[in-house]
Length: 205
Image (tube, rainbow, N blue to C red):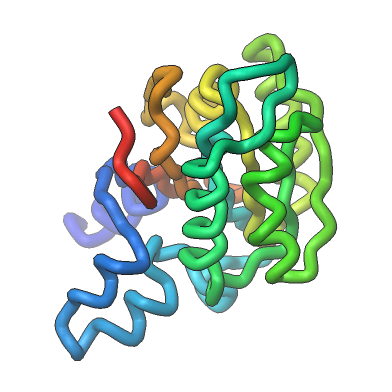
């Protein structure tokens, strides 16, 4: 009886740990785990680990930006972070990449998109929680069995993560934070399976 109860609870368990990963740090792992960690340091589920009704989302805020203009480009630090993102996801299967129309979000995703041969899809950032829910519903409906990357903003990524985690992962991203990255898995049948917050690249306040 206890085994049956535990099995029933497994689909609704949420993992909300936070850890930092980088290309350099994965090289310090022991030899038994080094190949696997170097290939996939963020622990993104493999295609074989994603059912036809599940969607894996990788969400992050755009990288560091210049402090001028209404639509600034990435700064030197931001361009370095974009390259780090490309390296971290280099061996990860990705089906689609979504960004807003702003330079800073597109430029964050461009190195990764070019390396994967993926055409970036643009979306309009949601202004309300209802609009966020609708956007996420569409993402999940259109990407069952797939892995997608979504690049957003400090005021939109937390709301998307909140929806994808069924309100179990509530985070805030300050204006100076650029190193957060979130991995979620959702099932069309069981809802949110897990939501994990991690850190990547150069640490920011």
